[in-house]
Image 1 (cartoon, rainbow, N blue to C red):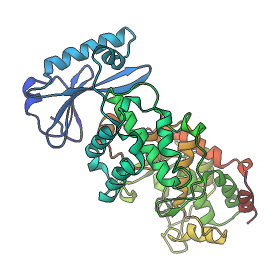
Image 2 (spheres, rainbow, N blue to C red):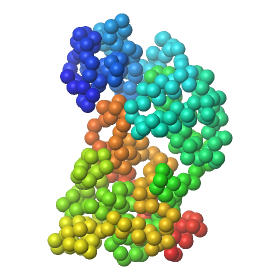
Image 3 (cartoon, helix red, strand yellow):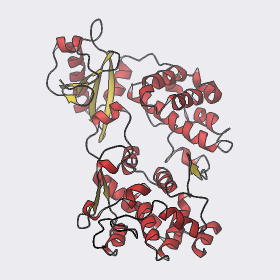
Image 4 (cartoon, rainbow, N blue to C red):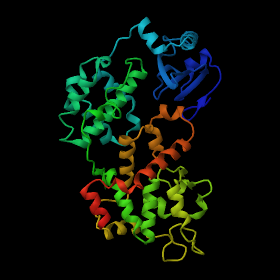
Length: 410
């Protein structure tokens, strides 16, 4: 049996359902899974495709005194019959046996508690609890979660949208996650009223985000003008910074890049695990513009680095790109901040999935359920994402503000 890391395939037995203790997802076939959580609780879940998309539906508790393996198999077979006849089993289940819908507050508290292990630290957990509690969500906490609609979300967000924009944006994302989870549990149907793209984006004004965490970032609509300014510079640090922005990677990953890691023909840069923050090798799809930059660089004999320094076999200084920003009189931003610019652009200007954008930034997926179902690194999807980003930032006509014009002239 495979525990927390993998998925066990093959038919389950009634004894396994009663006795297995290792946290993980255990497949019985036909889309039926036994989910064992930390602490030993068990639930049945079904994976299925409907409307061209993959869905997950929870089917109740498993084990002694709860739904048996035979009952779960019979239920899944009925759901499969409904799918074959063109029906959504989630909707059919709601019609046949209406569930008791929890309040938003109760479900949000349960969601936060069940996801507690994924939070970075106690402070991060406390932030979720505070923003979803009475401080901001008092007006909707007692409302059944299936009744939460767009006006309810706006009542929470509008009073703080301009006053505390960073908190408001994070809260909106948390609301979206919780309502998505409620839909997966069968407590909601239809579109998510907290979704940004194609929904709240048309109602709430865009935020001017200048920072993310401790890394000062340039608003993404100013990046094309900044790239145009970089292209007029002749220094190797300017080229490295361009490449760093185009690839949405960290400065250390760029400065440590070696020619042996790069395949210009396949347009791939493979960063070894030893140089990655998460400790896993990361493949970076290179856009045509990124390939063009690399192809134009001379290779220094005796130095394997793509961006060599003055010392033999050494890369550029760790401060090289930061000094380039200073020479351009841009001490108000950081190199790392361009990753935030990229992420904001991807969220607000594209329809690429969340997980594709997170993979592009080499962020680890902390949600075990999500990671268990996903295979690979979405490389081809990321290739299209990075090519779209490259086209966006490489278009000089996007110098649309007076501040952007000033960037080009500096």
